[in-house]
Image (cartoon, rainbow, N blue to C red; front, side):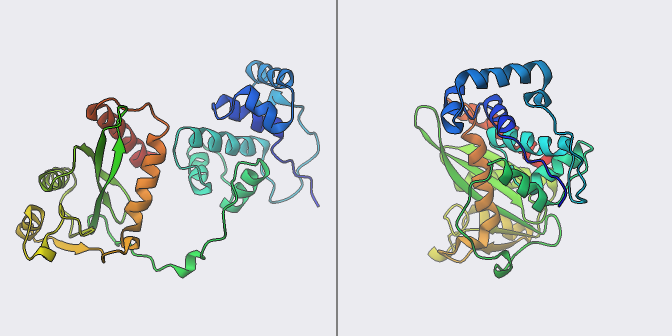
Length: 285
């Protein structure tokens, strides 16, 4: 067996405090250390960086699967920072960041082991295997756009709605806008402005909400008329079957996780500014 160094408790403690996930007092209680000792670690970190938190091991890394201390430390730093900022911090995302930084990214299973060793993974109940799911994905950009809206609250408790358009193939967030509340006219307006920016899709996929369809009431609404004029196919998920739009449902979780880490917006304009920032980061990072 080759020697393999785990990510030490000292490093994890310092990174969590720097990312404001724990206070010194909380870290002391959680890890059974004195506040004085943790302050000493923070001083060493400020003076010499993360490597100064503890002496380096001189033992050789002989395992062919071993990764460098630099990559191991960066995995922990990325997980802590991305999680603190409300962004996705899974192994695939971490590997992408490592590659973008010019580091040799290990396998996602190795990244997962590093996160487990650093106690940065919360165990979850065993889920169905991914192979048991039937996946739906468009083959080309602009083949299908998904749309849905979700609720959010302003600082004073006012309920607002966030309307999203997502490309099914690329997962690109085409449009992300705040409304009080979403109306059929809003759906048409955002759809047309998104077409101006990205071209028209071959089809749309939404639920059966009244802003998207009134066919169950025996008519057409403004959005359905617009699609008919443009020759765009309308697809609607089966009632009470949200898995059809799993991508946008999952996207809403990502968006809300990020919003919860931001200052509570006082006005719809404040929230829209946050959404613009999120959209740029989501699409480019």
